[in-house]
Length: 123
Image (cartoon, rainbow, N blue to C red; front, side):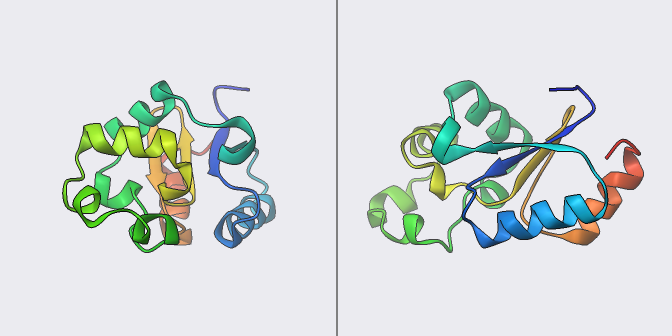
């Protein structure tokens, strides 16, 4: 993968990922797709995400995976427990997560995509 290419992280059958992929394609922005279901997520990648993004922006608290967690686990979410959770259940990670070089963002927001693109014309 080229250093100047966006990496899009998510799950292929997720509607938000499909929407993001379409937006990137429409904008003619090259990207690599990392599918958690097929390629998994390791501690290094999850750690990078946790360093770059807040727990609030990274963990999807509206999804079924989160709602099925025990209340105690939800209440005691920390960097350490989030790492374990992300490795065990990648579906708890908000989608999409995009990275380019040292910039990370989570969630679908075309305005943020445009701003990020203005900050880094490669995107």
